[in-house]
Length: 324
Image (cartoon, rainbow, N blue to C red; front, side):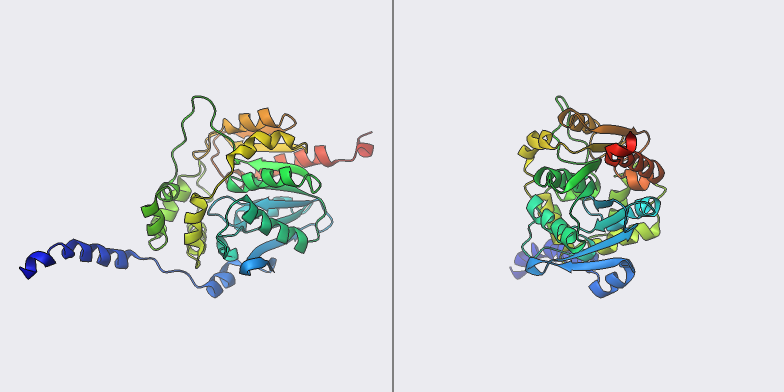
């Protein structure tokens, strides 16, 4: 009789054993900071224990450019542009809450408001009055929302495969990469808090791009290790269900600053047609589409991205008196 009651416990025990065997430990914050911060790294503290990792590099007398990364990335994604544009521009990059060395937000707020709070901390810490803001993917969404909310601060807007626009008529959502698919359901969010194989991180990264040549072992390690910083995996689940306030897409036309829209034609995560939607709603915007490039143009095609950003800023920020 006892054996009959014990039989259902066998698969439960096997599952529990498999879970414990596959469980991926969190990384050590001190070790990660020693590995992934550099001489330019700074940290600014805010409310609820928020501590934002940022870098202020390049030409300190140049036009300041604030750059925001995409979901699951960090400020490191901008290093190719810092190298190419830092001679002329002041390059300010930051890691958003719930990512990298910044770590989670204690109040678990990953809405626009929570993310903009981190941007404001860095803007204040670097004494910026006016600046260019740009972002990739989720960072692009935060960038145009920030430009909408702060027209007195933003001189120009640069969007790289930015999120936030609705699908066009007749379109279906593009397939998500492995990580984003898992985050769409409660079980996946639970599992990713504890089980995060390096191979799954590599697969997700490769499924996001068209040009894979920049993805080396060090890049995969960086994504994987920083994703596993205490609290960051839980934050990824929180971001997956955060309110992105889609109604603000109808207000983007209120932005009157010059805008540049850069897009990888082969972006597997956001249809390149979204660039058309941005252009329709931001008629002053310039649009450049990169053939053979995916979701992360600043890493897949850094030379072209840097050249187009430089040419755009030279056109729109040159004083009228210099053009006469």
